Length: 379
Image (tube, rainbow, N blue to C red; front, top):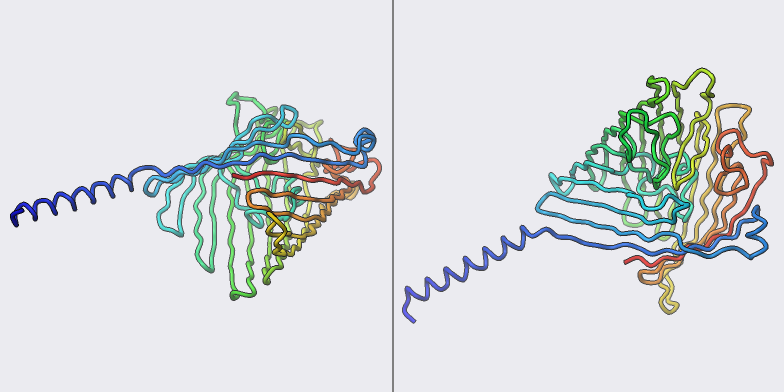
């Protein structure tokens, strides 16, 4: 082969490699995952549950999609619950743009930056904050995030919570994953800010933060805007296998209801069923866990934990709500099992009073227990 032909061949080969590499870079990367979960529970306040020795059934099937094209990113999670628990619902779903590896913007149904994130809890039940819309909630808006080795901060504007109907006076749908204000009021034009500072070494790690939220509450009956706000300070400590989460939060909701409607409570909804919540309260939470690596067949680790939460309602006549969850998370490859014993007092999910437990309180004002096992395969 002559010299010129060899040079031409090498040039064509290099060009082909470059074109193929560029084409591969421009092909969107898509990852699909999900989970299938089942749940057993024994509730001591339900006579039928006690007589049967508890109940075991379907919990949720979910699909997760992550995609990226150059600096454009997508994240979405859709969940399928039973009809009585709200049916199908979009837990989160947003489009984003990564300016740098540390900075990105997200638009759509994105996680509200408030409190310890991603979770202020270790158990299947979350913390008591979740039941008043202040843990693992996502709303419709735009969020900017920054994260480096020491500093994390997020700034967000949420136009509203998940909106499934666009009528002038349409209430929010009960079919949603996380709790939002419902009934005659709707969340709107909300600002959130969150700041974290991390310090320590490879053995002891600290994460100190604060969060704030302020927004409107539009009443579809009066046409007037009320307001709501919340503030939290939080701290996390990780020492080898130990993990500690502490948080103090305070919120208040000031709806512009009709004159004959009470303003000391608001309706909130998720999982297909609304309930009343005290309009003003302080929330104190503490959670501690210990992770033990094991070699027991497919089981690789056991995480033992206890999460405690107190809802201190700011109306003297209201009965405070409490939650305590003791349990263990068992990990075996893609299989996770939460084995929990949850105690609740004036708690809608842990006691006989549903509608007013988180507002006025239950009639008995006593503790109730629920033994719960959630088993899921995550893929």
